[in-house]
Amino acid sequence: MRDRQSFIESVYPSLRQGRLALEARGSSQVTEHDGYIAGDEWADYWKGRDERTLSASQLEKYAECPMRYFFQYVLRIRVKDQVTFDRTSWLKPNERGSLLHEVYRRYMTEVSASKVMPITHDHARLLRIAEETILLYAERIPAPSPHVFERERQAMLRDVDVFYRMELQAKTAPRFFEQELIVDGQPLHLELGEDMAITLRGIVDRIDQVAPHQYRIIDYKTGSPRSYKENGVFAGGTQLQHALYAMGTELWMRQTGVDSDAKVLEASYVFPSERGHGQVIARPQTERNRVTAVIRGILLSMEQGLFIPASNPAVCRYCDYAAVCGEHAEMMAHKRKDEANSELLHTLLEVENIE
Ligand code: SF4
Image 1 (cartoon, rainbow, N blue to C red):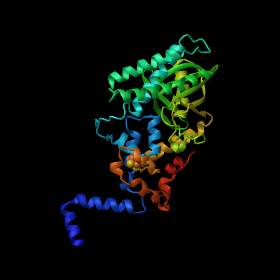
Image 2: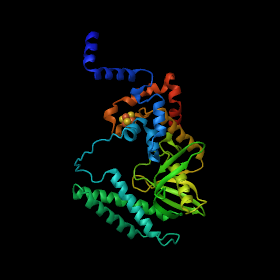
Image 3: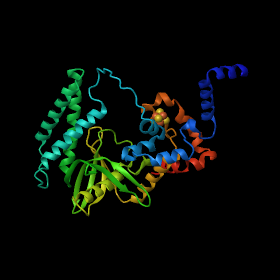
């Protein structure tokens, strides 16, 4: 049998490669078959590449699954678009999110245009904007039936109501909406201490002023608040946006002359929807050193060539690359704990354990 195997593998070398890959995955060592690119060549390439702009979401995605980051942002493999007709639903979650963001932005821009505080709210105006936006979306993305359209329209109007009730209680003064963090058309160069800096790209949903030179930034979320734990400020590096945007907003305000003494005291994830129950998860911006440590850990792990599968296999369920990985994330569980890999994985595991 052994002879036959080596004979067949000599004719089909890819079969041999496949067998070796499976054996390597089953071993205790982290290897290139687990997404580890060993050697200085990678580190030199990674540090020297031209395009080094990182968004907060890219860093968060690396923290959630380094392997997915590699597929998506390094190899740039993407799943082929498939047009499927679903007769039971109209808007996809991201389309619904964009629609609601647009309604909230348009309404707040209109009612705060006079700059008179407190804002005089106008429910009829909000409803008109919501209905107009829903119709615009319906022209672009046809609903499968009037019944489905009506059901989703009603659900979005309930979301809008939650938003309205939240705004009635708001005490801060909105200053900017969907503010892109760029200066002279260029992304921000964000210094993170010592020798570390990143080029940051991003759009802040809303910037409110709470006192002279003091601000609060808001990120609207239209999904579920479940993964935003009250105490998990950085959640293993998967929630960095609040801290990066807070620093980015201060820098943007300074560099554009909007407010040279700007200080962002708080970044909030706001859930103005029926599903989100109007929850506000506030992240006071008092831990700048910790965020720097998390980002440093992520950048270092990238430089090390570590693009291993997710620590939490539950995320694979909704991943576009699940067909490629199979059960790789589960198979990695014992390698993460194995002494033989402790030095290699030290920094990455530290990031994953940061609350
Ligand atoms: S299937 Fe899982 S391990 Fe593979 S890329 Fe997706 S999240 Fe990562």
